[in-house]
Length: 112
Length: 114
Image: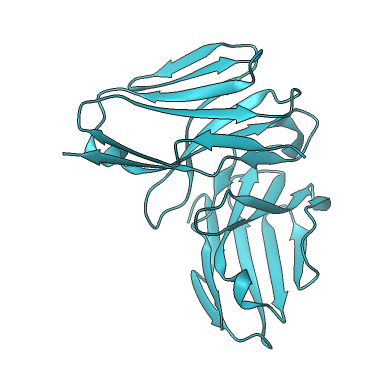
């Protein structure tokens, strides 16, 4: 079946450093790739997304890249801050389908 | 309250109880979802409703029964649950289920089955 693999499961960085989270997907028809951030005890919230007709998208300190050929996409956070500490989920879905498949999540710790 | 709301926020029930979770969205969306979130596991899609019609049932046991009376409300009826059903149950909504668009999540109901 369709699945999304996400790595690493845990990531610890020093404040100011960059963090990179990688995901691979199996459904070649996937065309929408959102990233959600879930702080402790709170709901998942969209932080950035990318569609398959774009290779890269940036929003201030966060960016997402997509390689459709290799079926993988990545989240990049630069100049990390303690408030970036959370669980990050990648996901993949396709137009015409009703499912969004989520990765298992990456717990990011940013040490001050 | 705006966005997606869920009640109750916490629920403890015995295996023989019957309870219901409620979700309400104030975003004018056409699609609503139930997810199960367990520790160290991906979000598991349970049900999808589009325009009040169930369009996805992800092999969920019959002890979970969804209901969508209108596009703003979604219920999850629970009966004879098992301890392994203890988890955070998240409701979400989106503008259109088929478009692969952004989903907006509720705060979740933390369910404990004794």
